[in-house]
Length: 117
Image (cartoon, rainbow, N blue to C red):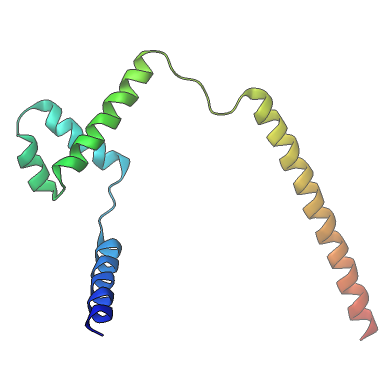
């Protein structure tokens, strides 16, 4: 019996931690990493000021540096090619036409049913 109570208590605490965890925007992460790049404060002090673990800071720093390295190396490939974009636009137009057709049919059916009443 004690095991179930302890387990549920631990899960409860984990749920609270998960729900109250702060989410940093990409801009906030960049500002924190750039603060360390300036060298005016130690990493430990910056982490204390922003209430983050040093491991989190170093993860952000690594991601920031890798993204910069890729950008400087000319890795600017787009995620969608122009052919894919054109195909998506055609599909979008086709779907819009289908929706318009369905709305028109719906209106006609609704009016015919109103006339029966």
